[in-house]
Length: 471
Image 1: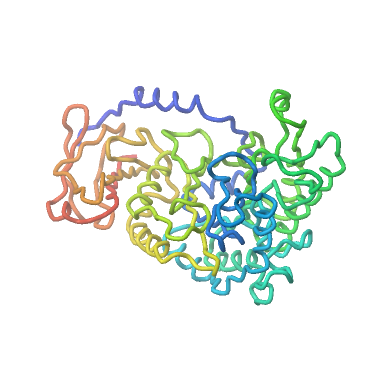
Image 2: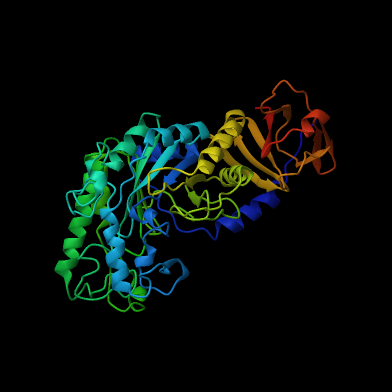
């Protein structure tokens, strides 16, 4: 085949325009963190799980406790019209939480089959309920107040970490920096007014100091008592130092500095090279960025991960609607083609089970990944990241072109068109049948190829053409 020149200048101008709008990023100085970050970027696909006492009501995690006039904070049920009674009943869910069908080995097996490589678990969400055996509070799964504490696997975080490590997963601890149960975050003397501390930190600095120590102690427990932890994934980005301009816009001078530098140093003392993700807080303690429920339009010039729900809610909701297998696979393709990782959330119910649909989706994703995983793992983005129904990745001298179906009824077209590449093409193959000979030719400003008719009738969420180029 004649050498095909790629329209580099045009595509680079588009990419640079997008990158110019990206957030600031501060690369880590620690060489081990750098190496682990590169390894994590090659994993591409991970599992996130939101789970807590709220699963008994089938409601959004934690946010119904927050007295803000936002849709995701709406209260429902018989206590909805009395905030203080609602909070009392919500916190009493600890006394009935008994997920006796909890089986983390089954989750780990399903996630491994799907091709996931790392897992992040909610050790504590904003409501303050701890899914680990902390010594800092009795508001936890292992408390005598919780019936599940009588079970041999009551330290849920420890059991989940163990099950996933046995499947060679990286494990990560999600931890909420705000804690709406702590008397040093929401002081019972005052009613809460929003998601922030309900007292003036400058007026009561000792109370805030107690909260900082409480947070540090809990994170140190997770870093020192739960085996190897690869990622510390911190949520609640409003808990951070504020600029002077930000402080002018809040009711109290709440500069919610919890000394993240000390927390990161402590975490790396116990877990050398751990990735720290202080979400939405610009600075050196955010080793990668985490756009939520969205896919960037194009390439981003730093490590990043889209966190997204497999259904519609982060927490378990009865009869929740799961995305189709085609949607989930194409989401993974689009994220990876733009240089990111996909962290897919699946929520257990009050009994400790996943919906059958979740298992079905992971099984089907795994079947696709078994054939096409080479085009996902350890790949780099390339320009163009998308071209019509195609998305692209590259690895060494190979380019992977993903053809994504428009809908469930879409079939492969008779002829494909792709942009011209800058290197001479040696060979084209369809992943899953590398022996198939694919006819290819240059036509004007692009090149074209065809697959035999019998392949066009096959069903897949996406087909992958492996394009081997000369060195």
